[in-house]
Length: 376
Image 1 (spheres, rainbow, N blue to C red):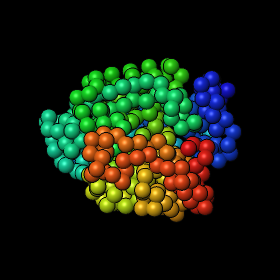
Image 2 (image 1 turned 90 degrees about the horizontal axis):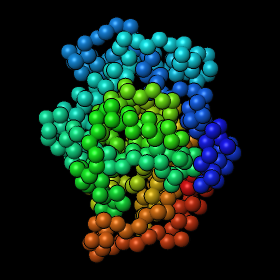
Image 3 (image 1 turned 180 degrees about the vertical axis):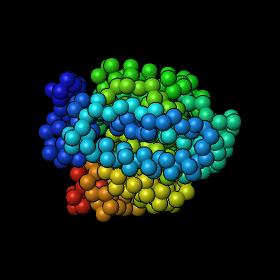
Image 4 (image 1 turned 45 degrees about the vertical axis):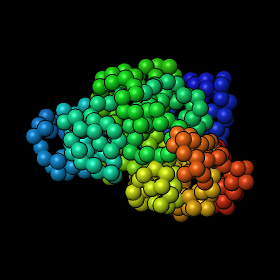
């Protein structure tokens, strides 16, 4: 048993994985929070700030970002002290204006005009207009449940699936919620916090924000932390096409990252996901998260006929730039959605990857020294 969790009753590897020294080392903070030894980062954000009530709504966006930068410096100092065991969360008073308060104010500025992802469509989502993702400011949850199919260190995972997405993948397996913005139940920040707390009470190891894609729902997600008190790791399960500003807000809140890294070049990304500058944006964001010291399990989906142009290039970039991450090299690709409806147009990806293609991916990862076996 891992300190109170019994996932091995269904997934024995959920226990065995923690015997792997690389997993314990690379996910050490997540492990500490998961077992209640350390506080989740969002709880620390609530204890960092200034003992003065500020009128945040009257402040300009640049002024808010400057305040955010200053509070981040304090957050980093406090986080390091907590991580090293020098102080406890209970040693800190709750400030009148917290780091989380600043983030909540800023994220609502980012949706009107909207700059949550790198499409930067700049529509007034607060005013009811719908962006590239198909969403206005209303947030809908397609489903929320205890997920037993995620990577071994994450099981059981409290997954919350949001509607809408910034990518338009022709092979999307969740197209019912990524393409239909009205599929799901409307939630506000309090309701979302209740959903997360309900999942936590079921014994999940983390709260897993996914979709669709969670980035487009960032305003209500971050505000929901105001109403949460559970010491549970927060997990961000994203396509990583978020804007620099969105990433800045998330860095201090997320305990473990579960990002996708689909394509090794911009051409394939545009053909299959209608996305510009994919590799540039996603590699930038992965590097930012890694350099901040965050813990990461990257998912890479091996696609048929794309081992050379995508899989190997993604793995090589990871090995050269962010070598201490864990990587799930996934063989679960199957033709779905538009690939099935127009198989002639997408003939090159209208099948499952072969054993030879998967073997080539694994052998290349081995040569690069990538740690993938415990989570693949």
